[in-house]
Length: 131
Image 1 (cartoon, rainbow, N blue to C red):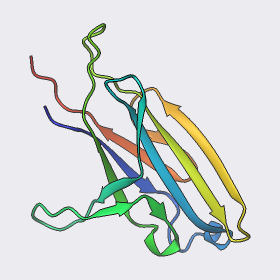
Image 2: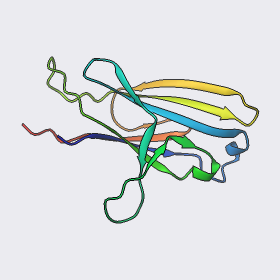
Image 3: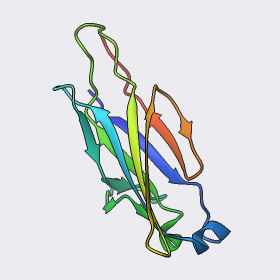
Image 4: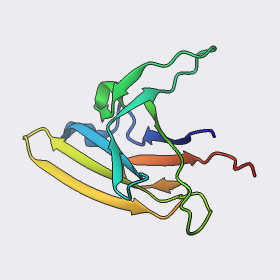
């Protein structure tokens, strides 16, 4: 079966005035595992507009210099026996470090589908289920 992919794009352009107050933004994306616990990932592969199959991996840290990076998080799909349907819930945690060193955190759970907040756009690519 194909993996579940969650593409994450930072919505702050390198020239956005908000970078004057933000040192960096770190992201973790979570997806349910077989044990029922959420599997958190902070390393993903960088989506590049190049041809061929080349993956380079990176920590999910955005700063002014890397604001245009698009990262793809890959998870094994989960199909609970009780429902027989693909699990589409995912979560994310954001750790934002401001220029003065202040750290703010937030955690969100998404039911399914595309999600957008002030900083990021999340686009899941669910695998096709074959029966």
